Length: 451
Image 1 (cartoon, rainbow, N blue to C red):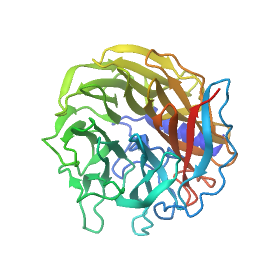
Image 2 (image 1 turned 60 degrees about the vertical axis):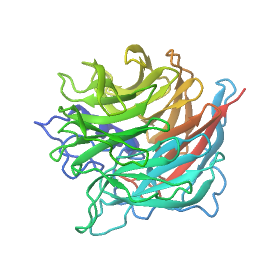
Image 3 (image 1 turned 180 degrees about the vertical axis):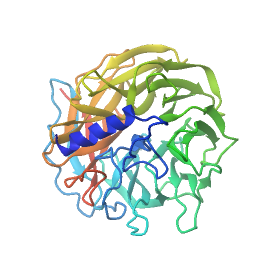
């Protein structure tokens, strides 16, 4: 079995066995206090699924020369009608991994992480932000937002500015240890001091969303003993990222991989709930602009959900991407659809992924498709791909985005429109057994229709 397949197999086994009474070995990307559940799977690792490994280097800088695009992936196939417009190219010259991306109609905003290069604290990371124009060229210089010891970080567009959230690390007795929310100005630099969310010192997962031109919400799990073991909470935010009310308890049961998105008058929230006979249940609910639950929760029981959960909204439907272990032990991927009232619409088995697969992002490509980004491992190769699904549940043929032998790719985040979709991902030509090498780079490919 190749190292990429082994990394995904270990991920699946940890999820199948994540039981409070039988804690398994924590993966490299888990919090120090986690004894069985994974932290930050939303952010990608082992090329999207691992932790820090022996990675060195600092945050990404604006490349002086972006160089020639890689030719490992085929350009747009007219038979499919949608595909690669621009072959992948590295957009950082320093080590960078775990991207989250948002399109604001003009530019992409992207956050990522890098090793802090602190020998005394090898698990310490730095969190960075940068804008990229519609051609994928970096604008200005990357901003360093802070330091963290855990993978989760997220990014949203408020309607007027980008807002980032991450779990800040208190280093050497200095700084705030908990969730920080940072607004960015028009030049992509921090706009004022970050908002500190008190009583979040034990936050382990987080997710962030905004209603355009209005309020936002940050959702997070807590758990010192184990990631997500102490429940799920939501906090309303103003446009600057400051809290606008107390935290709301969503559930007191153990959770994994929450994801929130703004829909039409309400926020949609999905997560994996461990309070089930056959872990894990998939749960979906709606939240008001004050982070209060609305209506009944929708729970998919006895499905054995695994891996990451990602969520997007478009054309009156919420689309939830998630994985399920099949009878052969492989992770099969699905997109489950709910209407704007939270009622079920359809469920689609995603074509395309092979071997061990993992959803790494779901995004709405205006005007008519959900884009599900995934990674899979077959033999020694780990690659990424994208599958489009309509709100009516019709799936188009998938596109495999990156196939470069010996250079595993993963952790893909997608944002944009149907005519200008940007996919940011990790590529590591020296991928270790866990984590990343100092050769890992943030890459970008753009996609568009073709005939």
